[in-house]
Length: 322
Picture 1 (cartoon, helix red, strand yellow):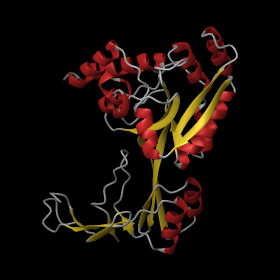
Picture 2 (tube, rainbow, N blue to C red):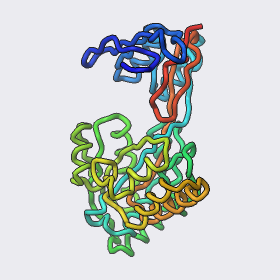
Picture 3 (spheres, rainbow, N blue to C red):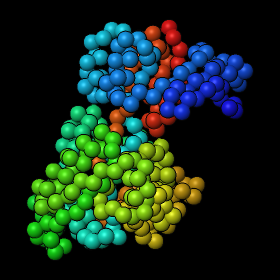
């Protein structure tokens, strides 16, 4: 429907999306003449589809399934870091998360590598306490001094007036990664005296309720290939609520830094500003970036030319059968 390499043919609600090659595409007619996108919710079933030959290309396989496919000569697998960052957020409109020391205590309580090992079977990259992934311009690896430190977390909680910890709720949606994440985060928080009751909601309700600020703590991910898009949606006043800033934390200073970084024509200055922003938001700790998700795909060995796009919107054009 436009100027792309493929044309829309059909879409069945809850079923297949069918495209066909646009022979007059300005970049040349695609090698593949027909593409069928099929939703297969369970990762295991996507793997079975590859093994049986029913599926030519499958996104987002299970980590254990990738391992089982390693010895299959008829299937090729790819893995690559994405620009999706998983994080734990806190609603600063609600006590005790209106207290910066409490939020910093949470940052010290959480163990990103332990989280990655248990939720992603080790197949993710620690976020280094910044929402900018390493492949995005402006990323700095040392924007804070945080590390997993239970004693430091307890010390900060005591200074904030919570020597025995406190109880709260940890919200997540009803996806497998979210549910697994909640269990791990809940246990890590328990180690410092924070009793977090997990509240699981249907995805649509989760998005709506957290956008309205009904939550205490929450687990979420954000994907962006642009530093302004990522930082603006997480920390800017104009993004409060459903637009991305579900922590409801902002300051005029950080707003101004984000705006200046997005409008300056001096690239070096922009990178300096992004480094400053990352340092300031890490200190305030309205959220704790945990992991940069890795992408993967499996394909029949005769499928060539496909590559994983860090922003998750993978391109089929250029893929062909050998």
